[in-house]
Image 1 (cartoon, rainbow, N blue to C red):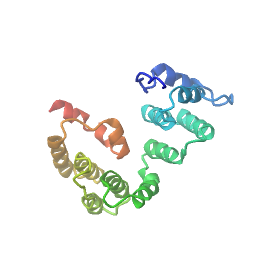
Image 2: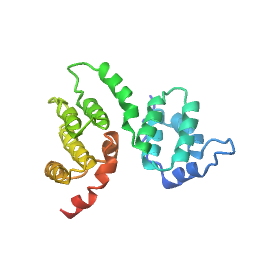
Image 3: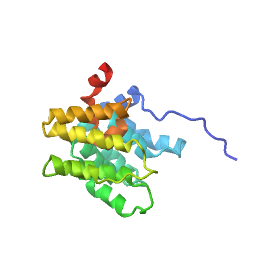
Image 4: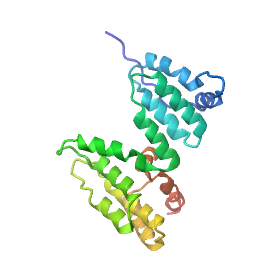
Length: 216
């Protein structure tokens, strides 16, 4: 019987990430991060390559050239995984264009069971479609039309409130925005974890609320 490995941290150290970004794009050599990816996967078969890649994306969102280099290398050399969604995520998060993920989210919902808690994907779709809404009212109605079931994550209601605050901010409605933020803060003791805010394309907006949360 194979002995279980002790739990290990999947966080990339600054040295590991720095080594990846110092790799030259002109030499033809794979980035340092990518060179070690196959070794990590072989040593830790339960560690998805996508998780390593996505963590690199989230931690270093502004390193455009390096990220694209790593993404291209990993997608070409990890044949067991489909990286098309991760490529779209990189574009969506880097350029603040969540619309490029809409087809993926809608496809996910098309294959979902009716009795399954689909609030996460439905709320995500509403936030994305709200970016292209004709007006503020239409954007808010998209969020209001998302039905949250008893077995959905309860904090999705707070995502809806935060998204409405972001809409008011986008449409230059400071009084409405302030009311929405007050409502959000009353129900949410802390800001959302960055990965959650990022998944709902609200991380940039949530950054504006840090000082308000800290001063309350």
